[in-house]
Image 1 (cartoon, rainbow over the protein chains, first blue to last red):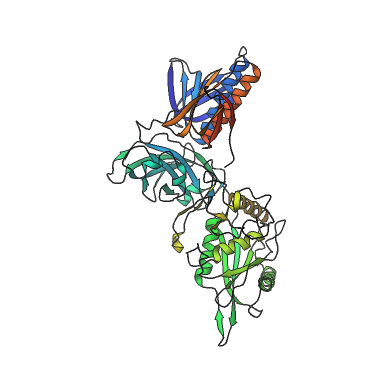
Image 2 (image 1 turned 90 degrees about the vertical axis):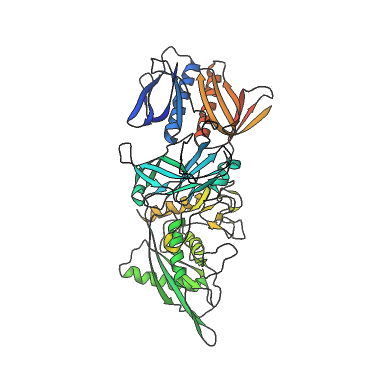
Length: 451
Length: 83
């Protein structure tokens, strides 16, 4: 009896037999061929046993997990199959999981990745020895089995605490505890991407480290339409002596950046202008929406892109204008405008210098047909559909996890956004980000708006 | 009845009537349970589906709750809770 360990590089399930052909090896070009065959005389238990092995091997192939297969010393017929033991005594550095994220993701990679969107590969590593160590490293990515391999260096050094060995949650909830790799934009084109660990080193000594329980997942990048948005900064004059209030550059810049990081888009096609509000302050969002809609109508009449959403922002320097959308369209309707306030207030949690970013994400969410979930004082328009407790990004930290991929242009670092702390952008809760529910909902609507 | 909860750290499909699964919080802290069947059509189909669920949980980082006898390692039911 012999045991072969490797990655399922290819698996064919043939009706004849039925027979499964399994190519197992470390790379697509270095494999051994094995088979599992259902024979005419097999009992039901035998058939189920063989189908179970094929099912396991399919799962392993799709998720990039290693497998052990047993076979005769001179036979290629698989007699048993399984996932290998992760021997933490022999190899104290173990890979718990790989997560490829753009804004919100699950460990099973349930949220589709968008081609061209800023993407971070997060390695969750465990160190089963004391004292802890700090590691850095490289991953290798390929866009197909025969494609060239591109090496990407980690963006940080991760400190591995032995007390957290085997526990993904604390590493997932802290961007500094995962080893993060920012993919080059050319590696996020539409199609597959095969990810493997190229090397890890002890950052204190420079010594190479052996990694146990490695996985080599393949992810897929999907085409996505851009978000087209024109942002109108509505200025107004108020008081005696009269003071004019206009949104600051940071309000425009952070809104565009936030939409690019949080929304399901690879590109935000934006333009902006400052317009004098025609209504007298203190006006309401209905007044501003009417003016923004009129401006949009004129722009569309002169050849504007009809897929463009229009959003008005109003400085809270003179007064606070509560935001609203002109409607929540049931079908694609980019002509639905919205407006909202902006300013430097932190609301107790947002310290980037402008709250108009997530506030704008909320009001624009309405223009994509998104309703209030109803957990933090907002109307309960989507309470029965919203899938997670309390408006959270997930019902537990083992569920979806938010991740802000950061934006060096506005000085925004990468940040982990734990599912039970962060809430959906369509709520009125603090710590707003897009849940997978809203992310996928906006994506579906964007696709409808861009046939 | 007893329940063992955790991630599927390892799964071995050994024969037409036996599979072993290591469940626990980390690779070096697991409990070994078994999936067996008596060879009948319904029992082997149940065991096969159980193994498929364990394989899916293993490769997708989903915790499982395996029910077995207080003094038996044989899994009699499996639950995967929402996350």
